[in-house]
Image (tube, rainbow, N blue to C red):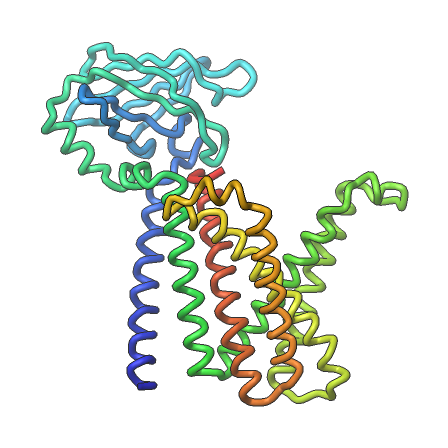
Length: 354
């Protein structure tokens, strides 16, 4: 049984790694990356049947003149040319889009703006001389960006949530069956990261008006927030690692247990907030979620507090079995939180979420 579970766990980890690498590669390769690739975030083609085909801005070659951006891309062996007027105060505040396809004028209209990773415009062209077969070929060629647009921001959040939950299950399984150095190091990192987030959030909520009478400027207080959070995080990491590797007197273990449990509480509450925000909509419970948000927050806090208390007790007892359970609990929660942070950083940084 143990061998079968380990084999299944390794298979799931391998599959998860492939899925994560593929997902991140798809996101990075199709990211707008304004202004490095183009001065606009996206161009789409509106077809006669009402469907939309999205074009990644990386396919456009752009040149900049005094007042305009001139961009062109090869679509089905013919040139699509866009001419855009720069903004007077912010040059990427584009206007007056003119489009030519195969040297024939076509409609070009602005369809909003997005963060990519700076504020950039979205454009739509209509009535290009393309047959349905050619349009389908364009869609297939740029399947990546069209798949991401079909998922939408909410769909990408669902995928991120699912991959994060699988990461947590894998980490918990590995910590249970391999409660060795690697699991202890990861658990220490998790507790330290959780404490860092907790202290940063606590100090970050302090208004500047409260600290300025004590001689702090906004910049110096920001240094205090970052430095205090880092010191608390590193201290918790080291303390957790010391207790996991060595046996200390119970009076020394008590504050270390509390410190570690605070980190776990923070990561657990963060993960549950993310899950309660995005996962119910997958099953059509969006209205129920909005109506009972305060209840869900209370439930999340209760669950997080329970896990934190259990973790503190297991850590304090410091028996072989309790440490094994602590590693399983902290690794599972920590892996979910770290994965969510990774996906959130990527989605925000690349302009897929705001």
